[in-house]
Image (cartoon, rainbow, N blue to C red; front, side):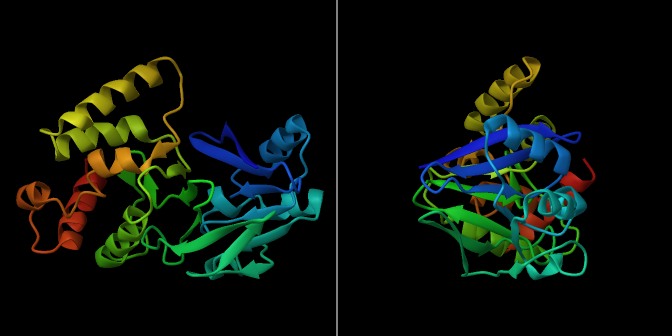
Length: 251
């Protein structure tokens, strides 16, 4: 049985430890803050046996060396990690990563960076998506191109709607403000935004989210919606996505 331990770290990151109660394996999903990951594992009585990186940014792979030194764990991630932070096994789209008897599917979700991957565990109904998609948002397009990023989001859109999306940052309140600007007539989005505001007022987390909810409310996943295409322009969804992403960058 898999369990996810979530905790805040740095200024707005979430850390995740994925633990298998049968094999006693524990995976650090990304490594923004090595000391906090090690502390949280100790509090749970777990030993980190693997690291799964989603992309190369320091707030996702910067703790690799320290955690490996403390635990002897193995490190899996995309090729873009190599030469920047320690890595033992390079994976790409279509590969799998194992925890106990369960396989995570490695999925290309590039766009935020050119090698960004996600780990989708279909049996458990969850995915670790890094900075590819957020609650009501998506990552800034630092390295990729609009069609590339839209194709990545389309792969996420194809997962079962009940999939829990564990994204890496608490950006939801600011994402909601832009989403309402982008899609003001979306009643489901307005209700979601109100819920987010109430949660944040109480200091509660808004992550994880469900794919079903994001499909109904996240403008970046809805760039193929005819109403949004008409409002934001573009003859293809990736062009609408590009317009939305540019607008968010300057919002």
